[in-house]
Image (cartoon, rainbow, N blue to C red; front, side):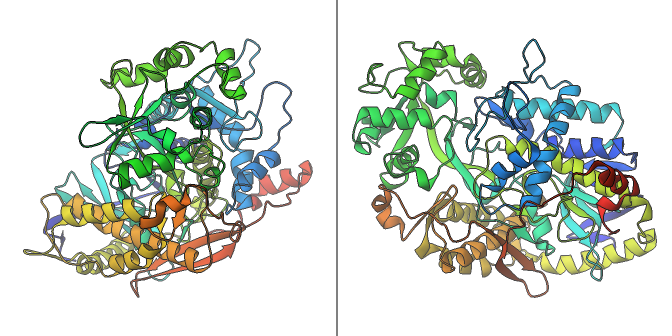
Length: 640
C-alpha cells in the first residue's frame, strides 16, 4: 500500500485499543461505560457525527423503556418477560432471557445517572401497558426518553475522560482473512484523509439502516452503517423484519399514543384541493373507524393481522391507497372532530380511557392538550401548531427488528466483533414497544462483560503485523471501489435504490417485484463517477449490500411459502392492493425459524437460509453453583 487510497492520504495509528465502539448513541455510550467500569480505559468511541443518530434525535408521544414490572402486586420474573419477547416469533430464546434478566439492572443504571423515570412516593417505578405487553412493564419520561438517556450517558462518558474520535466515518472493517477476527477500522476523517485504527475488539452501535428507504421517521442525520459489517461477510438475521407506522413527514415523528387516542380527523386532499374524510370509504361506520383510530395509539406498528374485521391496521391501508394509489396528500387534522363522533356511541374502551384521563374535551386539539400537553408542545417547538394547521402523514419505516446475527454476548459471526442496539438482530417478528431501548443497554452490558473477561488473554498481532494486514486489505478494497471520470452518478443511483425499496420492500411487498428487484441490485453498475463527497460513495456501496441481503432473504421467505406477518403485507401485485382490504393470510410456517443472510466477499454472492430459533434455556439457578462459575469466569466460555 503506497499510503494513498482513492486519491487521499492514509495514516496508520501505532497504538492498539482494547476496544473501539462505533457510534455515539445510547447503546454506544452505555457500552463504553460498562467497559470502563470493568477496568478497561484503553477504549474510544468513533463517530461520523457526535450529535447525529436516532436515540438522540427521535422519540414518540411517550417514548417507552421496557423492563420487568417492579410496582404494585404484579407477578413478574426474567423468565416471564423472556417468554413475552420470545413469543414475538423468530427470536432466539437465550437472547430473550438475557434481555429480560438484565432489564432492571440497566433500567436502574439509567436512574442512577439521572434519567428521570417516574415513581410514586414509596419509590415504586409504576408502569403501563405497551403493544405486545401482557403486563404493565413500560416506563417513560415523555417524548424524549432516548434523548435524555443519550445525554446522561454521554455526560458520564465525558466525566470519565473516555476518548471520542469525532468527524470520522468508518468505511472499512478490517477482518483477518485466516482467523476471521476483527482487528481494526479504516475511517474517512473530516472528508480529507483516511486513518486506520487497530483494536483487539470492536463494537458496532450504529443504529438501523433508514438509508435503505426514501422516506422514514428516522431523523435525517441517521443513515446506518450495517453495510460495513455485511460487506465483510458478517452474517445477518431477520433482514425481512421491520416496523412501519404512521408518522409526520415535514417534521419526522411517530404518531402513536396520544396523537391517535384523542381521535383526530383523517383527511385526504386531491390535486385540485378537494378535501375528504376518507376513512368513511374503508369502514362500515364512523364508530368502527373511530375505534380503529383510538387503537392505533398502542397498536401503532402496521400489522397485517389487524386489517380484517376493520381492525386498526386498516387505517394504514387506507392511507397507503389514498396517497400512493390515488395520488392524494394525507393529513391528520386536530382542529375539528371526525364526522359522527358522539361520546354515547364511542367504543366503551376508548370512552373510558378518555374519561379517566379527564380528556373529554370538545375538540381533538383540546383533548391532546389535556391528555399529553408535551405531545402538543413537541410539534410547537418544531414550528408546527397543531391547533392551526393539519399534519401531513405517511406510513414509513420506524425500526429494523433484524440486524447482525449475535450470540448471548452480542458477538457476531466475526471474532472480536460485537453489535449492540438496533444494528444487532435481536428482535423477532413482533416485539413489545420499548424493548429496543432495553436491548441496546443490555447489549452493551453483555459485550463489555465478555470483552473485559477475555481481553488480557488475547494474543493480538504485533503493530507491524496489523499494519501489513491493513495495507493488503485496503489495496484489495481499492479494487472494489471502482470510480471513473464518466461513471454512474452516485446520488442518482442511491435515490433510485431507495425509491425501489420504498415501493416494493416496505410495509407493502408485491411478490411480482421481489425477484426482479433482487436481480437489479445483484447486477447494479459497479463503476461510479468520483463524487465530491466520498462519504456518499461509501453510503451507496453499503446500501447496495444491505439491499441485496434484504431481497435475497425476502425471496427465500416467499419461495419457502412465507406469508404476511409482522409489519408487512405480501401481495401478488400492487395492481390488486384493494383485494387485501379484508385481510390476508398470516404466516404460521416460520414462527420458530430465524432467516439468515450473508454476503460472501469471495464469490460476491448472497446466501440465505432458515435455522431453528434457539429456545429459552433451562438454566440452573442453584446459588452455590452459579457463584462458583461466576468467580472462575467459566460463564464466559472459552477464550476467543
